[in-house]
Image (cartoon, rainbow, N blue to C red):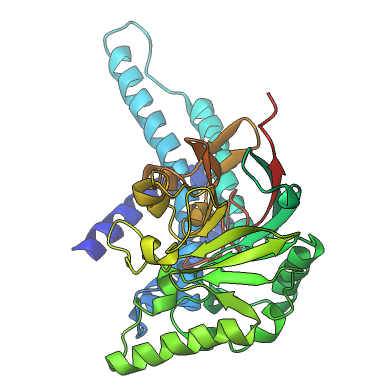
Length: 407
């Protein structure tokens, strides 16, 4: 039934969009190319969905098929909406003309203008999605934040932390672009680098060809990491529970092989000039059916409320549900998970929107409540849709400062 609804919906907007194109040109070549593109895009989408799959995460082939279909459908949908609006207008105007003394109702020049306008506007989402698939997904951005804390130990005034999240190595297909992102991370020369989960899509083996590159990530005080929901292998059909556990253990070993310190519901201290801050790392904990393996109490066992703490927790819903009100006072939480949905509009300092904001209150960037902060990293990689539109891959650089926030 879902496929039938999709086919009917697609045919309706396709017919409308075709009429828009016919208003613009009568060239058989142009109309033929339109039909050919439509058939190829839909045919490839159906073909990819007929291929066997071992899990719920989109394969690379399915991801591209979905991306091309999305680009074409958004363009056709906009064209169809313009044409539908014009048809409704013409119907109303034509009806009114029957009760007037005017001779027939005929506005071909207006219809052609509307068609040209529709084509121009429809080109925007088409070009945006295609750009997102071929350039946007590797358009790495360094976003810098300065956060102030009255109780930050003096020795850590000016301390720099770099954060990446959601690598999703099973989606990668361009080593040069990924190397650029890794090099950009190292160029920040931060004191500490933190990774907040989802190293792979499904299998630990996805990192086999990337371990050497990610092993080059270095910081003076080390690299620390936690697990995300995808790291547990929950989205793949395993032959046995033992095979799934073996995969998880291999992934944990991968962190160690790369020189990353994986925190599994535990904490470590970073010391400087006889002062220290605590790094607390929990396993994944998320609402909405996501794994709840995180144990905040176990991770912070022995810590006091006065200890300055940086928490690594993959899913930002953990902060909303449990962390921000915790009596142990987690000064800064670092999360990822949302990817900013890899789609949205951001105009720094003025406007920010993504459909994911209707699912997550904290979905990208810095948020503050009760003097406690969370940074939701937009992700280093991408998942399912092989692109990013308006929400670019991110390296967060956070500087900790002693004192109160400037007015």
